Image (cartoon, rainbow, N blue to C red; front, top):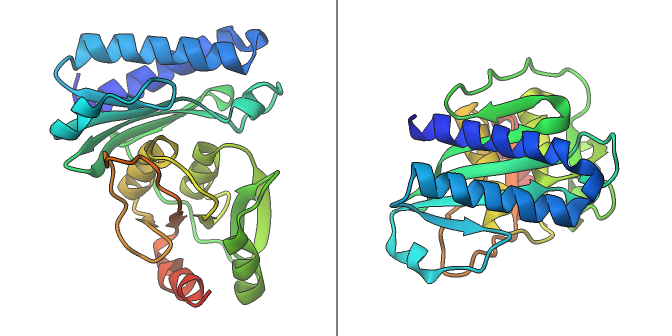
Length: 237
């Protein structure tokens, strides 16, 4: 399998496992999905390093050009509230610090979106700009975009679900300023970029991965025709 197929296959395998054990709760889901992904990556890509939300950080990754960045269960709260679908599995490969390969599984929706077969962009919407936001703690940048752009908010769960909502055409913008880590965005960014969407930090600078500190606090994924407008608003905040 090539790297794209590995990412898609492992995201699907972890998603299937999570569906089978969903009644055990989020903690069990995090642990068992992580174990599966680490085992399979060791089998399929033994020379590569791994950065996972659910494992201790191994600094050897900083010496490697190829690093798999995984979130075994993105949206633990939503996972623990069946039949919610807005949770995900992230499997990505950063090469030279760039999110190059990625797969985001939305297991409860029976979907795996990945860079091997990038999704086609959805048709342009003619209504108000729609923003994917957290259903519990929308970041501060959302109020600004709503005020300046007359945008409409669409609450949903995990970061992966929000990013894939842009890819799928359910919303036009996902802007986050509340603090994230590399595993929250690496796979979604790879998939979104492969689908032709704009991806960046909120100031427009590139997203870099496999950094010594994996904290990556902000993110913008949006339709390319809206990028200049959204960035102009965010830069003036």
